[in-house]
Amino acid sequence: MEVRIFKPTKTAMQSGRGKTRDWILEFEPTDAGRPDALMGWVGSADTRKQVQLSFDTAEEAISYAEKHGYAYTVEKPKDRQIKPKAYADNFANGRKRPWTH
Image 1 (cartoon, rainbow, N blue to C red):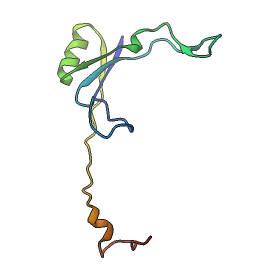
Image 2 (tube, helix red, strand yellow):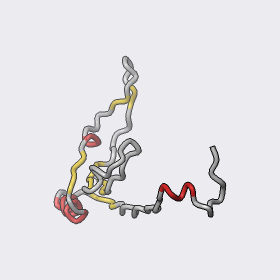
Image 3 (cartoon, rainbow, N blue to C red):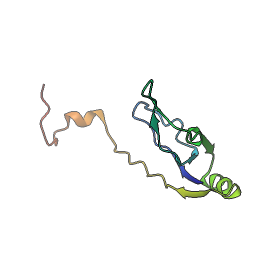
Image 4 (cartoon, rainbow, N blue to C red):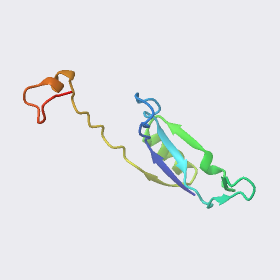
């Protein structure tokens, strides 16, 4: 059984960083999805892909995977790059393009 351990990124629909501090252990899919004949929805017999376990640290997630005998891969999180911005920069004299209406 394969699992993936990662730290989720923030979604485009949220401005804060909620739900991005925990590490997630997620099972890799073992069964391909099949469309339902009646509704057309994609279904699968693999119910483990619906399970996500959250941990405070990556070490806790790794020890859980080792304890249960799961093969795991750890994805390291990318560092946030914050560009300093100021409203006054819109009206600065040294702009590359002049500010106009």
